[in-house]
Length: 63
Image (tube, rainbow, N blue to C red; front, side, top):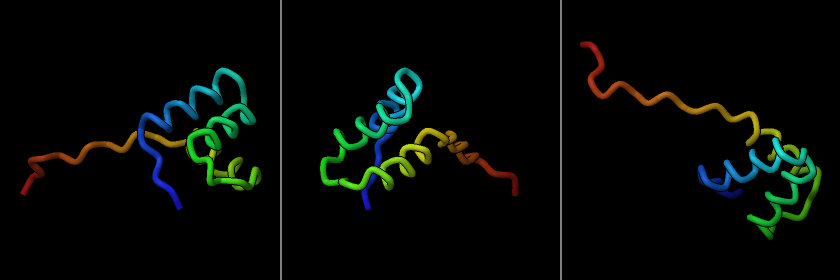
């Protein structure tokens, strides 16, 4: 298990957009050198590339 920061996700997404899936796999492995399995990396890259921003919760919800 590992945690991906917004900056790391952006780098992986950028690599995917500019150079394709395998470039994004390489970027993920560069950022997380302990990850060794390319098949797992592909799944994680696809997940990261498809992330959508989470809407911020309303600080003043209606009562």
